[in-house]
Image (cartoon, rainbow, N blue to C red; front, side, top):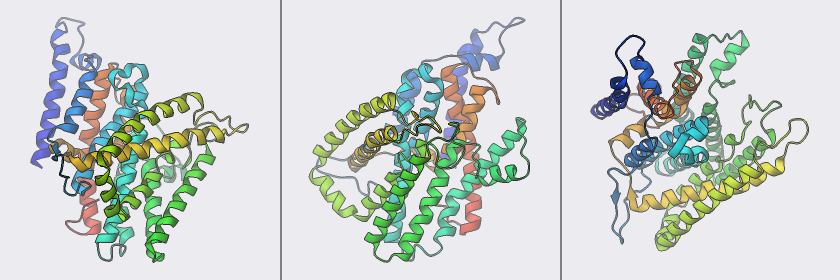
Length: 422
């Protein structure tokens, strides 16, 4: 609690400090800009946000000696910290896409979002299988205990979006209201992740519950995910590019296989660790190099072929989609492998990362409310690119913190007192 208050205080102070130059410089006479306008139009170098991100990630890191390794490099605490940073990076990714050429130093994030979603998928699969092999009778009560940790945040955030949509004048009638309230129709397209992760959780439960041989269950899980990827790819973007139904859009499938990769790494953790340690520096250099090469190749594919080259009803352009996926998926896998190798030597962790990790899911789900609200003006218009980024992050963190507290309380009620781990 003390950590959260401290971070909130620091964010508030930083926000006030950023607004002071504009407020002070404004004339005090009639017709002078309001403090509100001064804040929303004030521009500061966007590179400062990039520097802040770097500081958040690397402050407090602990690097092992050349002949030593981090103890439990993929522990829950460390993985949650990485996911907290990934959530912020995904926000930056969406902001850079919205700002386009105005994104400045953060423009590089416009194609990086898929890498950080891959991190979420990997640790979801890794966490499930690690619990399966270390906790007795883990699958007993799995659906109640595990699904609630993602469904409660999903429906809480979804309810917020429905309320905000109604306030902004949208009207839902009959089945349409049922559709948006249940999440069958996603008012917030970013919530696709929860829909998919719930399906993957259900598949995990069914395969490992009824297939006694865990290798066979893992193969079945992999086949299921591959079929899901192919099915989503074949659905394209809909008849009018609206992606109005589940599994329409490449974001539904381009990083999904990392869930299976997480299961495999957990299943064979000892062998993977042994190989990684034996060839550590070679693998670290190779994955770093290949991440760069495949990143460039992915940019080329997306620019020259694209997932969006289809013509609805005329040409589904499946070949272009497979071309893009054939490069982008290996890019994500290699990047995540690089991150995992780095975690074997470097332990990331500080109060900010710990805090962000505790609200990472809510942060991921809710930030679109402010991204669209500040860009389209449904909340208020923020003309400044740098303040648009800063205010979106700050408001998202603030609301995610509130929602996370409510979510954890509801999860405790359902799972039992004191059991809120995700």
